[in-house]
Figure: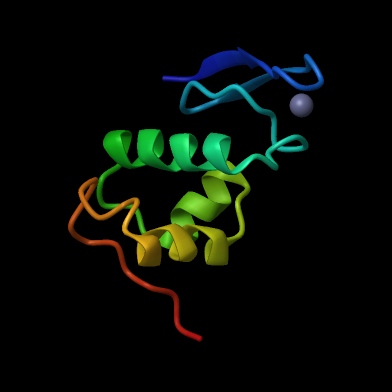
Length: 84
Ligand SMILES: [Zn+2]
């Protein structure tokens, strides 16, 4: 499933695998990023940080930071950390 989205910041139309409010250029707001990660993990619960980062254009360390803060703990059970 591919969704067509309109960015709420710059109003660019773009496609993605999840419904999201921000294009990759405007993906600066933490709440948007977190929402997108949670949505992605619902669709693809076995994704690791690297896969999520590639799909959503988010830096892996941002995803790992949310993991460490406990935001993503209930969404899945197999979230693997990247090697340093
Ligand atoms: Zn935008």
